[in-house]
Image (cartoon, rainbow, N blue to C red; front, side, top):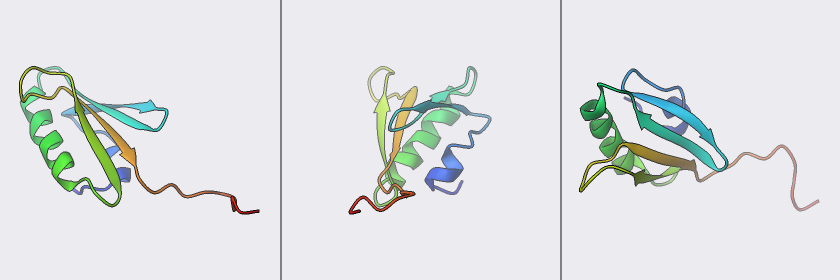
Length: 81
């Protein structure tokens, strides 16, 4: 799986996507929890220049939700005027 923000927000059989204020929330689909945990680990490992990933929920080292926020935001205007 390509680890870029645009690809992640498309969703996959193992996870769904909920739009959040400053990013998206990825969540495990029922019956795909192990697949989601593997994807979440890849996303966390790939985070850096393009996006930040924060694992949520679960017990111990398990993760059932992942908040992903883009670090670069394209603006449609020049904030300097």
